[in-house]
Image (cartoon, rainbow, N blue to C red):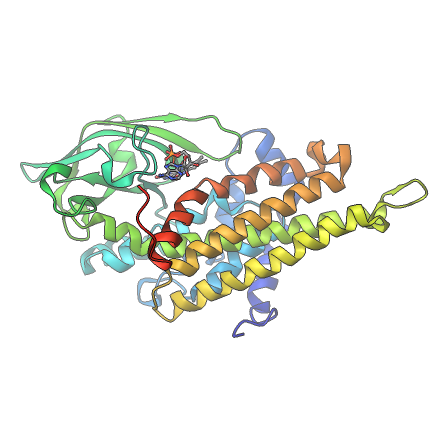
Length: 386
Ligand SMILES: Cc1cc2nc3c(=O)[nH]c(=O)nc-3n(C[C@H](O)[C@H](O)[C@H](O)COP(=O)(O)OP(=O)(O)OC[C@H]3O[C@@H](n4cnc5c(N)ncnc54)[C@H](O)[C@@H]3O)c2cc1C
């Protein structure tokens, strides 16, 4: 195994040190107020952690996927929620991989310094959902501009981003040979766009996760904001997905260890019927089982990191890591809640908050069934099911 548990200890220690300034009470209050953890994200950005994956030539720290994943894991393991800012770490990947040199020079250094926030990726639409290639938002070239019309849903961190990446159809589905062709990616300046063709409507949801409906009504964006080749936006998107899934897997692993730690501590302290509840096999076995599954999921997370860092095709490993980690963190969350009995429901224990937060990852950024479909078709060679 290439990754020993303490291989990234320096990064772990440094991120833990930063996270100590933002204890449970901080995140609890942010959750209660449905606010954005501005001070926390600023601190992470100033310390350079959000620029982990930006190459050093463009002002980033050029860390590996394994190292970047440790940053995300530690944030969640310390009780925080990387969901508020993980987009800043991976959305820019599309510019690194598919942008022109001029786009890289223009955007990456200010993303690395934190001056420019690009935390949003707009793909999902209300009427087509997981069936991405059928999305209906269009981009039409007119007088040297792209004109955007359509609608998106569940687009996160728009109110805390300066720019987003948008996926829209540039050639009608009926006119392309492959349904993933004819889609293109665009860089959208949110400050310019909002109120000038873009309307943003926040969606109140189960987690304190800033996410929105977007309405495009003849939004005009400059021609040079096309990202990657015209009609090949699906590939631009896919190129970044393995990084996104692997980082989210690491976040889930961090959540999972947080739940196991809390469950173990409580089971060792709480006395009922004159003994520690953790002495009962009915209490300790589920915690042990959740831990075993988390450790196993973590191995797949390291495998995905290694494949990405070796520039190998990490599609299967990244999807499987995200699935296993999201499932393991959710099981750990459930066990932790059960171990705490009624107190698990009290906000001051933070378990109900983390329970809600970690549940998201079986639905977003890709739902479990879509991962099963991917593995069935692309790994096992079974017929495409949709
Ligand atoms: C809090 C939050 C934040 C999000 N942030 C973003 C974001 O920033 N950008 C963005 O683009 N999207 C975002 N999303 C959207 C997210 O990626 C989608 O919700 C997710 O991909 C599922 O799409 P859907 O909700 O349309 O579900 P649907 O596609 O309607 O599917 C509903 C259910 O049916 C299942 N299903 C559908 N078709 C099949 C099939 N053929 N076989 C088996 N099962 C099937 C799905 O797996 C799912 O469980 C976010 C969602 C949430 C909740």
